[in-house]
Amino acid sequence: MNSNDLIRKYIEIWNERDATRRRATIDAILTEDSVYSDPDWEAIEGRDAINLMIGQAQEKLGDLTFSIGEVINEHHDLMLFTWRLGQPGESPVATGYDVVRFEKGLIRRIDGFFV
Image 1 (cartoon, rainbow, N blue to C red):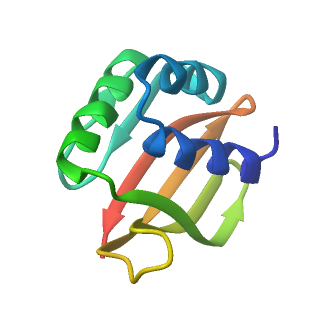
Image 2: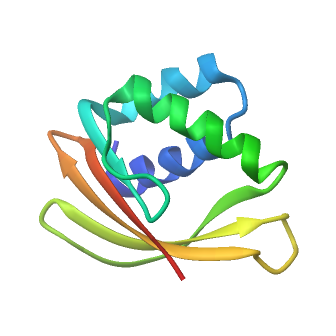
């Protein structure tokens, strides 16, 4: 999988409501010791914790979904891209940026920023 495929799958895990299917995708794209952080969540470590955190976030977000905005830049093992949160076809209710670090063909770290 290339970095664009990994990012597409990463966004899919945020929209997957079934915890078992979400976890299967997490296992396929994140390293075992992966780390996630954003303004609401500080240094969530590991696949289990990230899966749990996404489930909790989905409860708060209701039926809103994430989509990829644009890849701003990529170099070495890093990518910066934008995302949107909202209803398909409507103006987003939130937007942000993610910085992703890749390691050995998987996502090692995600640092999110809200706009």
